[in-house]
Figure 1 (spheres, rainbow, N blue to C red):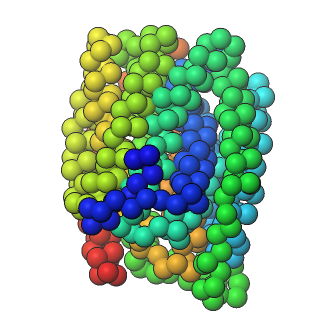
Figure 2 (cartoon, rainbow, N blue to C red):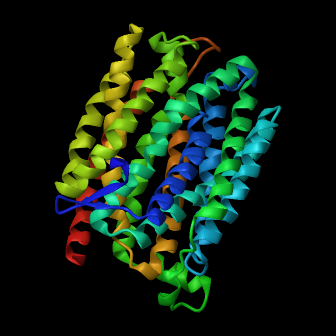
Length: 414
């Protein structure tokens, strides 16, 4: 199966059964966690109308997950390298499932925000644990491809999860979509328990006697802080546009609620095809060069997309695919580069803090976007969404400079 080949110096290396299961299980956990977060955007129009939310209130509902995830990352960072990574992943994944079920039983705005906070406390740490596992088990030369496969969970969530979730929401209500995510996550949790092997090699290098000291030692390293800053900037760009994507498509571009699942499905298919290719290119050409090209591509598409009016559906699909190409093509090389910054004994803490900074930055971005975007009544076009696009472009330009510095750090480490 070509899916399970990695390429090192242009020579194919077949993965063993254990490595295959690692990739598959981590991709499955990413699928459910990303789907739980991603589905907020396509359900946004349903939820805003159902719960009579203004854009600012919906921005808070989205950022509630991000802020709680950020807090959780900071609280767990000091402990992240003191346990078997498998056990840590199981603990937080079970909490994530419980939170997602709570979301499915939310009947009002307060219950929804409370459930999102609970879910974020657990779900926000899962990605960082997965990255630590990948960094422990795969070399830097392999990591771009492995992360390309694992992050196919993003594309799969759009291809399968989001369209099915929207179908379920149209058939019953938006709450049912969260219960569907929880059901998929329960199956994944069973695989996680029985198929993932313990990941304990990092325990041999643990030196700090207290969790607080380990957290402080991780935070005080200048190179680490630069890595945190670079990923936080990428998060700001994604979070600013994300919350109002479906509302903008429906109320401004003219996409119907029935066409929305098709839009996400087609965009997801393109992501599934693009991610492994970008992962391979980032390992064979240059992670930073791929990142920089993707940023420029994304900036152009963001400027075009956020200034669109009513547009025929086929053109919306094409432009959406092009924009997603830029957004996702940044993440794979950037994540692979930043994963090479920490030493093995600091990886768990580094990844937890990194995820925390991303979530907090994204939460702030969602709140700011909610304050910028205006909707005069429920079915009115969104106003000032293009201003959000301009801010994203400015932050993306700055992220190229910061990521270049990260690339130099990684190169110096050899």
